[in-house]
Image (cartoon, rainbow over the protein chains, first blue to last red):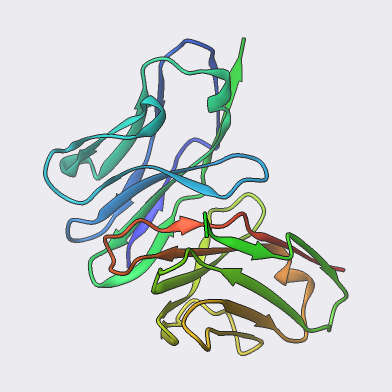
Length: 113
Length: 114
């Protein structure tokens, strides 16, 4: 069965600084990978997804992620964070032919002035 | 509709009671999912519907949990004899169909069992 690890429970970043959130997955074949963001009282919103092809994926709100098969990673990056990026971020993995997503435990992002 | 909606947004019940949680998917979406998110955790899969039928219910924790989607649109998650451990946010998602489609999530129902 597939699994996802987000090693960082909580990250604090200064506004305007760069950001990288880590995600490692475990699955024997090539998975489908997703990053979702969850703000308080809001539903999960998809930032970006990877199915195949170019390993660098661009998403909404200036986010990008890179699939690295050799490291079983799909880290999320943003060159310059804004105060509105403060939220909980979830990495998820899907498998072809299996409809459910398996989520990591999330990383809470705090932005300081 | 504009997005996935869930009602109620909050539900407080007493241990042993029966609850129903409702999900209205995006209009035209054939696939519907239920997830449960406990405090400090990521969402965990419960059940997936394709049309009216439950295609995968492997995530339902026990037989107190049941879900239906009789007309292939609205779905209801039913929990019998609630326990304090059932307290969580219950999330619903829908897609147009297919495992590569984006799952669009609703805001969730926060269930508290006293």
